Length: 124
Image (cartoon, rainbow, N blue to C red; front, top):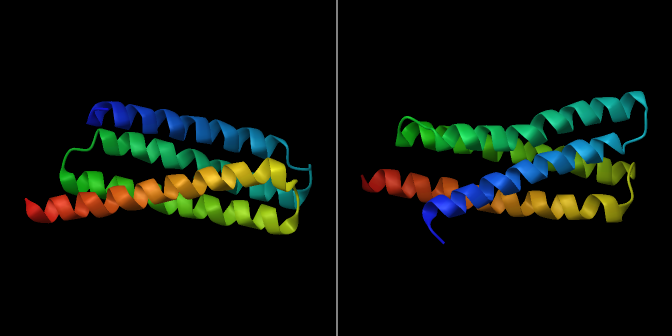
């Protein structure tokens, strides 16, 4: 698979993740606290892919690293909100666990991308 194809595949994965986050938030109970959690989760969960797309159009290596790092921060925040929902038992584990697993995988990919980008930047 080419570099471009990998990026396209990951972009699609992030888009699918954002849609899953939106649907998950729609399944939360209609309470003040759930609405607050939902707003935070939608903001961070959809921002991961948006920042990744910005990184793909970066003007420099430094700009790319900066934007990928923002995506990494957003997935960490998303995991935080997902774990709060998990701990509060607002949703059943079978609904929540797969999206937490996907967020963990996205986190690992972004960590690797940031690390590789920084190493490649130092070599230049």
